[in-house]
Length: 441
Image (cartoon, rainbow, N blue to C red; front, side, top):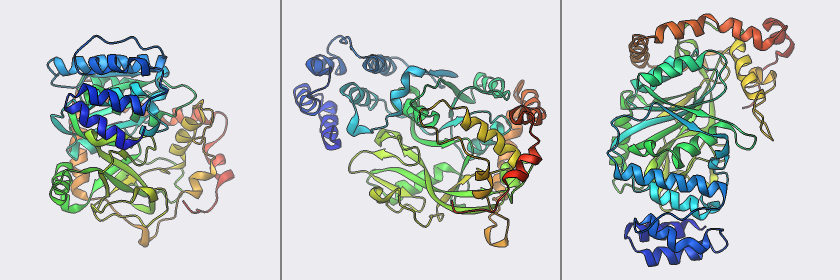
């Protein structure tokens, strides 16, 4: 479907013009299996008839989403998002690989229905994590310190004790925990992002969503005083037309000087040296977002702009071209290498995926190739005010019933957890066997 057709259909839908909407959809989806029932679906979408019965399995899932959205719109909204959710293995199609040009009729109708939900709150995080128990409190505290109002966390197949900690955090209302059951066609992150955009009505309560992984930490520029709301207010002042759909933050790739073992402290305290990196992660305005199928950057409504951290428009046709990163307005700190001991966990996580094509099974030498030695020229220390705020948030989280005990247990068992992964191999032997000098990112 042409994205401009989609905009015309959106206009007809908002005008409650059933005849125009039917005509646009019949032109846009002439070979869709649901084509004969377009008039019935339009009437249902406009609240004028009963729901038809969808034939295909994917369409049935989307029809259920339409029903949930109708209920969400007609019932009093909950004050807080539900503590738990599920993204089943049968929902791999929601990773939305083709983007909106490849949407089915039902996919598009679901998008229209969700567009009726008006946000009441400003910001939330959508993140993925697995076997990241030793970082969970820091990661959550970081985003709470920046002023994000909620976190939707997708996880799967944890074996490091994370489930117990995440469950407690969900029970305390700190996060919404979503079990992300995996198949063989979609990797965890785009499936999670697709679920949050297309099937999770509660994310629509928030105007802006930040889409990230568990080793990514957004750091706004100092002029925003570590406050995400100041970023958004400045963006709205820079573009009062309301047509800025997303901000893409370039990675700053933090390195570890080839460290062998994990040391105490926050990631931002342990790693203060970094390499530039041209890839991005996105904070998007959900009403204008079509897809996060590419993970790193968004697909937005036609006629809407995407900007960099300095609020300069990005040419999205060139988004995959290497460029000089823009850090004036902020950056996405990416703690990828950490120590070799921690990289072993990352490697095992990627190797365990049962994807038909698995690009996440990184060889050991990637730890060294994508690392760097510390020098005065690559020293980028954190803001001490942000560090202090994160420590305060961690203390508040640890004060919640049961949190400190479970978090400490995960930390104490980390070395044993790594030993199980490496089996009979000594960590130092693996390190020495694969040691090499850094290469290009």
